[in-house]
Image (cartoon, rainbow, N blue to C red; front, side, top):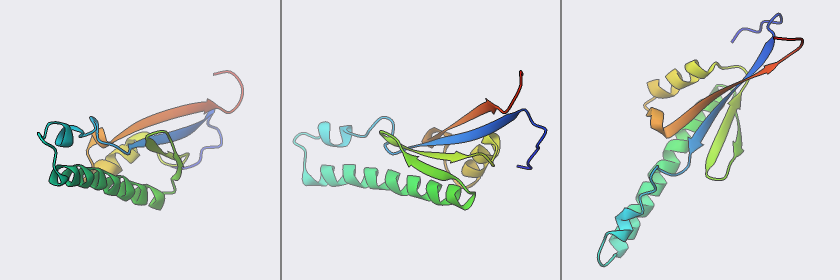
Length: 114
């Protein structure tokens, strides 16, 4: 985004990357009667696949200058440079589904009355 010193606001684009699928795939183990080691491994693979997708999104966002913090069950990726819609389009173009992340845009007034 081009800097505009005359702008009245700063913006922050925040992407929330969910570490777990929603819903969490516990049924892979719970519904198996009796549960087996194979069921637990399938559950673990699904968790591992999700972690890998989050890591790939982080790599893409890091290349665009995002910084990261950990939340309770997510990773936050923040940027004051990239617009929210551009980030969403970028992730979708790179093979991610919109349910894998959430986009937030926050404006902070620089000065005066808006």
